[in-house]
Length: 69
Image (cartoon, rainbow, N blue to C red; front, top):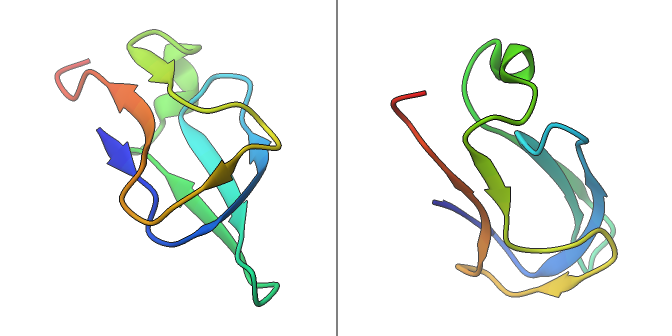
């Protein structure tokens, strides 16, 4: 499970659901990416728990993923 590292707004959820960008209340943009070459999985094994535009709190689940995949 990928958890939000801080409070913020989901400004971008990658189409293949392996990365998400958050904008903090202070205006910093944080890209959180799961794995290496995970774009090649075309979304297989990734389940987003939030939508683009959602407000999130630190520790909130963002993406559930299968680490073995």
